[in-house]
Length: 332
View 1 (cartoon, rainbow, N blue to C red):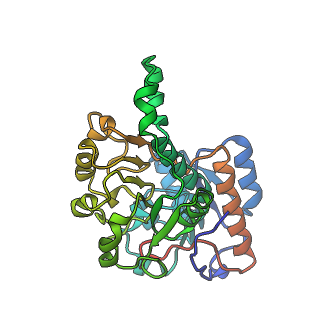
View 2 (view 1 turned 90 degrees about the horizontal axis):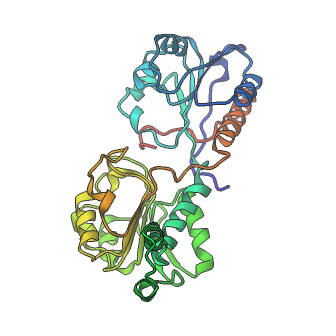
View 3 (view 1 turned 90 degrees about the vertical axis):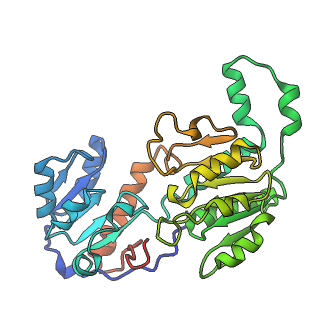
């Protein structure tokens, strides 16, 4: 598995007592709970995710370490909390906290790198489904409609496609690896180490690409990056994929470009509003695959989250830098 290129940061082990309490807010079975009890030297409290109970809030306030995505206001009011291992890559709901002050005592790590394989595979699966007409054929099956002569002439080959990946993190690098056997030409848009580094360069080259894949974090700098002008600047017939943040694209402009047939399709794992409300145009828009923010999922997802937490705990115990420390000044 490819890890996200985040520089680790030292953690002050002396800030924790030897029997540090652990607060866990994950949906776990009995075996998974026992595994976490074996990792932690002190008391472990298992909270119901999103329960909002006063007991959970009280225990978090008394805990030194937490695993999960507790309510931001609870985190801010937990004076003993020293390390929070998020159960996500995204940090959006915590960005509004006072990190210049809170960061003096609290280290936050995320799941950077954990979802590289599943998200990259979902992106590839969605692209292939559109190129090979699988989405259309699946719909025809439900209607018992044999439409071979209508579907076959429009099928496309992925081989040799020009692909632009927005981002150069672990998922982006893994997707580039998966595309390589198809003979795709892959370029990255990334501020410091991309083939395309500026918005001016992006605008100049956008029409070159058959496929554009959004894998950027949700920051002020990436919000609405694909506004109406850039969506209109995509190559006719291009496929737009977004598995990063729903704020990346102007959904009204995207729907218009898809409905008119100017774009060849979209694979959307994320949307601005989740769950997508009933009646939203994306439900019925042609050539759209909605994967409903499942791209990071896999049967062993929880086990791998615990693996990463246990590894960071061992690093913490040994005075080593933690993996995937969040850089609040950069927004990821």
